[in-house]
Length: 604
Image (cartoon, rainbow, N blue to C red; front, side, top):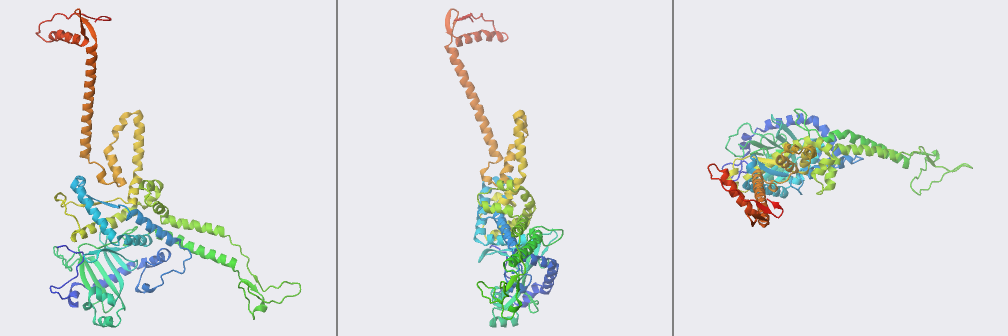
């Protein structure tokens, strides 16, 4: 029977567990203290995340329960360059790393020979196809787009991957501020505490009415839409773990829900577990022992703030030029002044003077061209800091752009973003493929494994557009070496002996992300080369035989006079050989000298 990644804790009977039984399996007060400690450790990042969200991602930062009802729009923004540039970065990462329109990963084995075998290729191709179907039928690609935006803005993102027979695969990205992370000794994220707001009706539907305190159970009948804060903790289980027993309370990774507040800190809502850590917490860049990462938006934030001030100043100058402050006659204080279009004002004036009810105090002519030019320079700097020039090439080219073109035109940017891609591979995509494979295996969604592949370790290769471009940046040296070798071979042919053509082509094929099925194995190449050499040898032998037959035909048609008789030249050669052969053998009787042959031109 397949094992599910998360199993609800159930008593041996069909009745649900009571609050006392749940409390025995989870120390909620200790977990609540750890939640507050993790929040204190995260507190230096809160103000930075709030400022980043205001300029780049206004709707994805929720530092407290009060943020659930805050305004969705930032009225203080006058320039949306940061928001649009972050949107381009998220779309570029999505199209360049996990595009649903093209293959972005490939499965292999730790044994290259088995991976290249017929059985290995068929099995791995079928597993890849089923994985892509799982990703396409779930919300994976939507969740990845959200994750890329948070990663580029806050430097840290988190997403859950859950699966069960009822709901299938689903991905749950979390907002910045509603979760707190912790890492293990290897600095990998292995703990997440998250806060979510749920109504009493949702709590009863998710966990059952029996887990609620009596006061909230009665409130659920009167006001089912009343909101409560639920804390969810996922962490490695240190105590109570029994290897080999995969019950909900003994799984390697614990999952505990409880209500925040005085009433909920006593007992949990649910105690369950996972076979492996169910989430992924990639970081853009990490300094030292920090749990949370740093982002490119942090580098572009000063420019974005400056751009907002430049926009406000420019708008003030335009307003003063279009609607300047006025100098109004004191006599109009009692009757007022109408400055609306086509407004009529009656003004007394002295003889010989023009009546003037009001005159502008300032005559401004702002240099808007210079202001716009300065703002455009700052805007371009913000876009460059968020890699928009690199990602714009991907988004504008769509399916026409190739990895070689990206590597050639944006080599400098690929070098700068290379460490980020490697970190995403290690912290997001490799764990993602491993967990997806494990979940599909438990849910019996994989094809039967060939006997020769049992026990082999799965290997993941990434062939996305950005991964290929990153590999091809280093392939430029190979192109230069090959070009130099071919030029040297024109003068010194032995220079070609330094090339290992098979290794060079195999490396290039891997960098281009070509499927293994379109290239031949080393054994097949050796067989083809041996067959080609044998065919060339047979062809050379046939050619020699044809030349010998042609020579024999020519000799047979040439006439000579031998012993007064006319014979062909071939007979003359045969008689000469008969005369010479006995003399060459030791102990052979001497033969009579061969008669001289005469041809039409004289003696032979």
